[in-house]
Picture: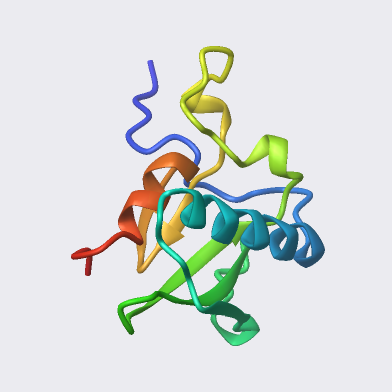
Length: 115
């Protein structure tokens, strides 16, 4: 029986940059809904993981930046928001500053006081 330690952290087949760009726009909107008003983001292709995740530098309101590796799949396949009909294990993880998180928890990593 295989043991899955970090589901969703592997390669993301079928991904593309356009979807990752759209997902980042929604990620910033979700941050704003939590009162975290990011001052923008910038694609940093030289930092892409190369596994279907695309790198962005996210500028946070307290002057910090975070590197977000965003999966390049359609939003409904990436944005896990802890809804009853969503299965946690079916969603690829984002990486925020090198640590993997599903969408809902990745938002928290960008909050105040997180490094």
